[in-house]
Image (cartoon, rainbow, N blue to C red; front, top):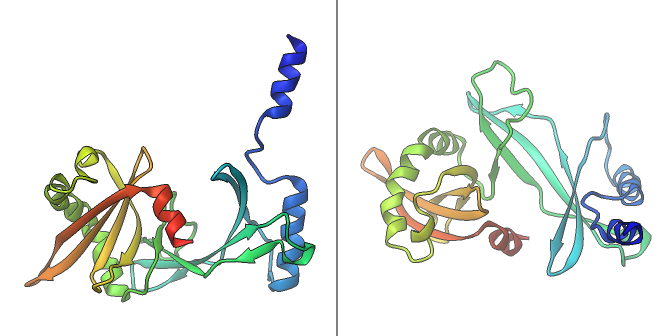
Length: 211
C-alpha cells in the first residue's frame, strides 16, 4: 500500500511552475525588461491538449484614466521547454486591465479586473462597466433564442472583458462558474445602450482562439 501511495505521489501533476521554470523566467525577464523594482510575476500551469503549459503574468502599475476608471497594463509570457535556453519564454501582445474605482488612487486591482481585448474610448468603457448588469439582464431574452446560450441563460455571470465585434459594436464578455462564456454585443438606440446579439461558448475555447 505504501508503494502504491508513493507511486501516486510521483505521478501527481505539477500545478505550479517549478523552481527551475521560475528561475528561467526571472533570468529572461531581467535581460529583456527594465524591472524598476520588485518583480512579482504570477505563474500558472494548465493542460492544453494533454500537454503541460506554463505561463507567467506580469502586471504594471495601475493608473487613473477618466475618473473613476483605472487602467493597468498586463503582459503574459509562455514557456517552451524545448526551445533554446534564451528563447524559452515568449511574450504575448500587451493587454490592458480596467476597473471602476471611486478611490482617489487606483491602488490594488479588484479580484476580477476587466480585460480590454480591443481599443475602446474611455467614456465608452466606463459606460459599459456601469451598465453591464442591466445589459446582461436584457440580453437573457436574446440568449433564450440562441441554441448555444439557452441552456445557461439563467446562470449567474460576471463581467470579465470588453471587446469589439467584427461589425464594430462593443461587446461585453461574461463568464459563469462552469467556465462558459457569453459575448453580448450592444448598440446605442437613441440615448441608451441596448443588448443587440448574444454568442456563447466554453471560456477555455474562446481564450485558445485569442492566443
